[in-house]
Length: 142
Image 1 (cartoon, rainbow, N blue to C red):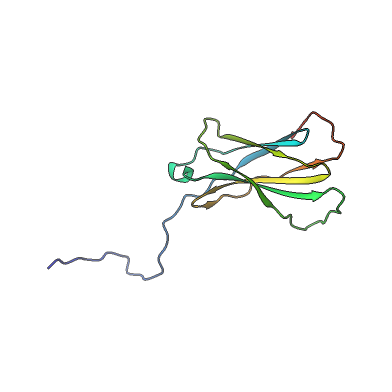
Image 2 (tube, helix red, strand yellow):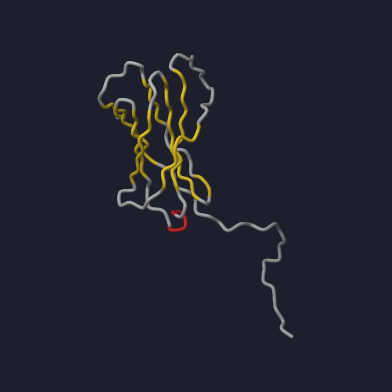
């Protein structure tokens, strides 16, 4: 007969899932507007581990409000997922996406990294007021 011993701390409790490393925050979200398109750029502070990189993607979220609507101080913005950008290990850890704009709207964008282990915090928001008669050219964040 085989005698199998059980090891433990002696304190009973609910099972605890293994600890996951925190999902890193997206940094330095910036934008440039050209005609009817906004180019969003951001970076990660470092590369992801192989486990985090598997199935990782950046969620690009957008809030869109007509410029004619009155501002509501203190009201939360309603964001919707506008795009998903797959994570690819790059030397610079910089990423970007082009998104279409419609004239006459105020857009607020933020980006967060999403992995199998959860989602990182939202990036800094950027706001783009796309006027109906916006001139051609490039406008960039400082």
